[in-house]
Length: 170
Image 1 (cartoon, one colour):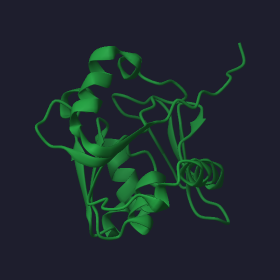
Image 2 (tube, rainbow, N blue to C red):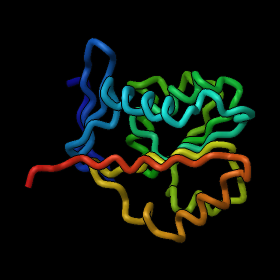
Image 3 (cartoon, rainbow, N blue to C red):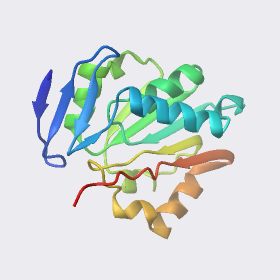
Image 4 (cartoon, helix red, strand yellow):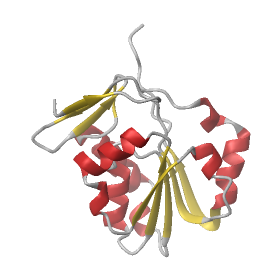
């Protein structure tokens, strides 16, 4: 283990080293690492995200270990990426252990996603990757939040919500 801490939002945050690089484990759930990278690469292939033309602005709700940020920065190097996370500790870990600060077209905002989506900005691509450990915050499935997502996604843009759920032992 490289690092262990907690925050107001997450009681158990750990960073592990590994052959393929660091992995982030939060409240009993992997937030980055080879498995998460494989899942996102598979999703991006299925949605044919590499064929999306004119992606100039990307919003990512949820930073975690920055896997989605890194993958999209490589796929769309000319796009401006804004990533939002409510947990400053997670943002610091993404910078320190996952080198999010080396992505030059990235702006990271510490804030509440459900408030941020009410801003006037619109995006070509919106990715919702919000988790508190293995749980998706309840507001993600609310019609009001989804209407806000629709409003901030440009008319010819795309929105992807990660609803991956882990089966937790009882």
